[in-house]
Image (cartoon, rainbow, N blue to C red; front, side, top):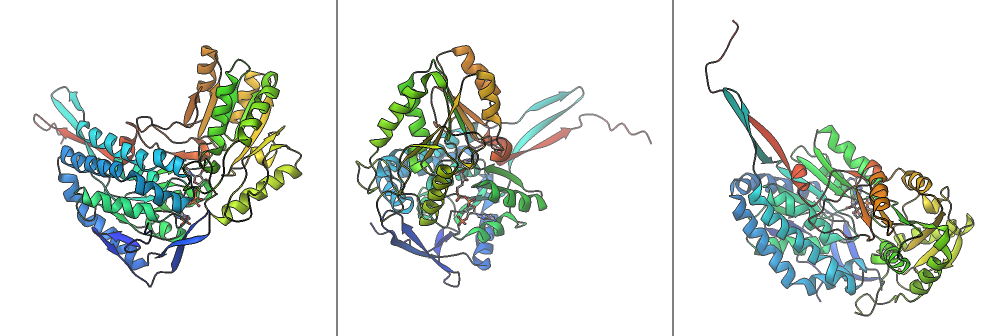
Length: 483
Ligand code: NDP
């Protein structure tokens, strides 16, 4: 596969290159091979992308919603038709196994375009009777939205932002992570093949400074970031200066609570999926697994047995279940977290080291006897490291689960229906899964509370974050003036 894109950026419906921007390589983390060389956006490129978006937005917004939907629906069909090639591209860029990218990345992006293509024509306002007079509301697009993506689900993140933004009449400039720059360009091409007018969706490349340029530009009405909490704080601050709207999809340290009446095998499945899928590089992962003391031994036995069977290797091999981490830097960071966990006295159940000597692979790692005050239980690791903590009492575990600055997600495993609802209600989290974990269908709003974020992606909730309300008051009689 030729992974070198035609140019670094996609602006005004065409690939654009500007070699004055600093060069950077995209690297396949399983082998270290350079798969593409690109250039960061210069201030000129950034400005051109925003101009293109500004120029295109009004005409796009003026189309009937059903026409916008038709184009986005065609894009979804092309995404599905090219799913295999897009999945290989994503696997090369991220290192995630093909087994995952074939079902979870471009396919989830296509879901988003289908959903919002159908949603757009259903959006209406209100009529508000006021006695003699009346008012009505209009849902308007915000204008030009900036999307800034993380490296773990590059095309999915681009689609989850572009689909609602475009469906409701906005234009977008999207900046992928510099570690995974390729699939957003493929998406831009597909959208234009589907009939999207030039300038409605643009891609610029670069590191944080390019994202910061977008977040602080007066032409941008809204910034949607998927990234870490420290970056979120910076972007939110920059956006606040211009009173720009934000959606912040940030990190987490989510609790997964397993009661003693749970189906242990299912709970182990959820803990494995919720810690090792995408080599643990998922924001909503349930990395603090609270297990009731009565079932702890059985749970750990099954967990260790099943974790040891996970097949690591070449992510392009369809048999491979876990690939490398996205970069050497991320691998080293995860290995440092593991070393710190060992120093703090957590009990290593399995894994705990680099896998092999080449590529950015880390063994799936389970720590038991983790205490709440250990760094393992407090910091987002973003790698295949699970911490198992003990508990005995429902009230106690709810308090401990909530005792974190994060609030992205939570999970509860129990056969007791009343307890399931009680605990779900008590969790300080944007999403709670009951007897399931990490399922994020496009129909369901997704996002965090506390430091994990602001706003929601997907579902009907996305409407609130990509439109604004205009109220129109209709005076239907004489003006009653006191002067
Ligand atoms: P980062 O926060 O490092 O980066 C996110 C994006 O922001 C990247 O495109 C990055 O560019 C860019 N960026 C960095 N600095 C700035 C800045 N000052 N202004 C504007 N943009 C900037 O996150 P990672 O890419 O490392 O992704 C991992 C994080 O993302 C984890 O914390 C994870 O939990 C979170 N995440 C959250 C999700 C959610 O939905 N809640 C989903 C997926 C991940 P560059 O990379 O080129 O430096």
